[in-house]
Length: 328
Ligand code: ATP
Ligand code: LTN
Image (cartoon, rainbow, N blue to C red; front, top):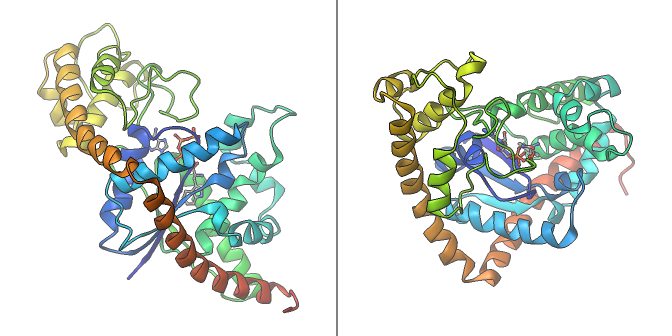
């Protein structure tokens, strides 16, 4: 069976972009692969954060991941900081990738904006992400389109390490869906929907109240043409193209065909709202059930961490030996 690894940051509530771009694939891959999924709290401290909010977000995220269908009997779900091997291999990865490579990462350029005060860990973040993936000798990494460049770096790091010190790591491949890989902000359709966005008016959260979902979709920015057309490369049509893309991801109707079904934006928005709400209410009722038993949640995360450590420690030990560290 192929091995799958992916991660998500506990940096805010899960939104429709996370779900359509990545998490839906996490669930569907469970039966096809040996899956390891991580709540990457080490990554979440690369930006300013509040300790209590981080703890709460970690529990909320674990609840949501089980609610969307991750099965603890099949998949391994764990919190990254519970597995210290991640931080240890990250140091080795920082000594494998270069300053030049890290400087070219567009996420750092976007989020860091050249500011002095940006945390050093935001710069080295892709080395930690490479460590996450390589520790599990991962074949495939289900992610949204924004992570493509980071996975390329993980591939380069694996190949470079293997070349220099001997075959330790599997060279991973990204797994990016055809539709839904880049869900855009409903208020600013030129920007991706993001947990750390400054306003939540353009985000739909999985756990959002149906009436708010309907309102947000109704107020989604489009254009004045009122012509429903899927033109993803035309910035003037970014808003309506994004709505069609979400519609397509939830119905499996290609976005071009979906466009032919609607004569105006109002009709598209009201049907889309219905479909989104229908999908999310199922998840929301599971979130409620799981939230009723917080100690069970912690128990499952403990089991996940133990399983993850068993795999991660074996790879780390091979990497340490290959790079020339003396065995203790
Ligand atoms: P942050 O703003 O804190 O970086 P985020 O919303 O980008 O958060 P992540 O935790 O970074 O979310 O990403 C989790 C997964 O969701 C990743 O695989 C990422 O590629 C995917 N993802 C994030 N945003 C989108 C989006 N707008 N469309 C599709 N996939 C997305
Ligand atoms: N950088 C990713 C989260 C992440 C990840 C990973 C994804 C951290 N480690 C390993 C896939 C594999 C993000 O911000 N979306």
